[in-house]
Image (cartoon, rainbow, N blue to C red):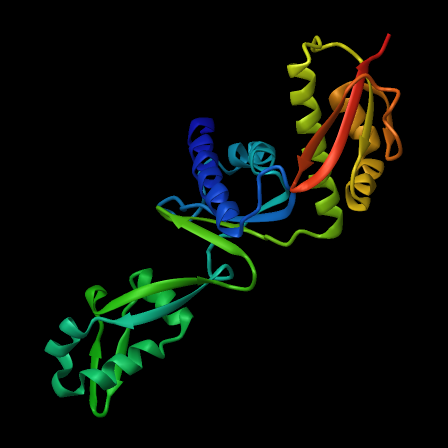
Length: 255
């Protein structure tokens, strides 16, 4: 059961990363939520649901989202649209094929979803009514609302791409941590060495460091963090870019 659940998580992670790429949001930038659909078992219920629930924190951490939820179907995530296949429709409707194509294009999303599940679907042109076959229709999925949806093998992964001011500040704080960790490594500090840290930059960047000062300190082993102002007392000041913004980072080993 755990192996099956892990396969679900791997697939959703791949789709989620693709959704983030489509949204143009880097993985270090936290997002609020992800909504998922996984293929159901033959009896219509998800097998090993408890194992899957236990692995949700792993998926949330991998994709840097605050909340992961599951839906039993993708009806609320996508809207379906139909495009007619004139070649096959011509054999059924003859000269009325253009009218049949218009009827197909006006089909409601809920009817197309039922059609995908194997339920019959018919259209009427004048007095002529005929059932559609799968090859008569190409179904196109479009995301509902502002969610970015990726689909594959019956799985759906939808990412909410909105970056609120709070999420933006957390993302900047994560970028600061990433840059400081690299500078620590490049400078030859031991993993356990404590430091004193100074960060300066734009008003937005400094506000982010202030807001997440304690978390940043824990991550980079800083005994204290100076935000803004001069960094003259430090031996070396590194001029860097953090999320496209110029910034200064200085640190020294704490004795």
